[in-house]
Amino acid sequence: MSRPTPNPTPTEQPFYDACQRGELQLQHCDDCQHVLFYPRTHCDACQGDSLSWRPASGKGVIATYTVVRRGVTADFPAPYIIALIDLAEGPRMMSQIIDAEPEALSSGLPVMIDFESWSDTITLPVFRLATGQTP
Image 1 (spheres, rainbow, N blue to C red):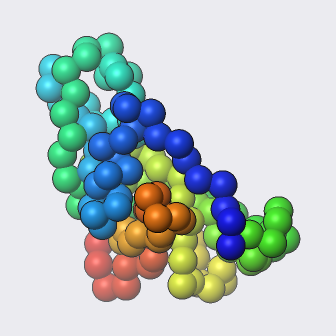
Image 2 (image 1 turned 30 degrees about the horizontal axis):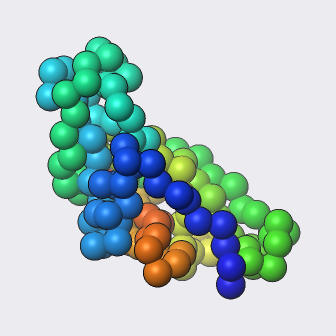
């Protein structure tokens, strides 16, 4: 498959480097302690520019989701599930839920992070149902 891959900016590169290692890292504002996602140069809460990267738990809950039943191209075989995930640390992330039947999903279900390689240099976070766990 030949999927479009991100071309990370210097601001985003630490996020992608962590994903490549199988880790989820999020930016934290050193001034107000706000947790950010997507990567930015300034805090979206206080506009401070003192941001640091810290490991995240990888836990979250499904805020909402959609089932794509007709892939846009052959590179995206349907059906697949796109979801908004409320991370335990606070931010909301759009990602894919893998290895789950659409009928088994509902908002509020706990999920856990996993990673999927899209190219030799890009690995993206995906989520799977976290049976028996709470976020």
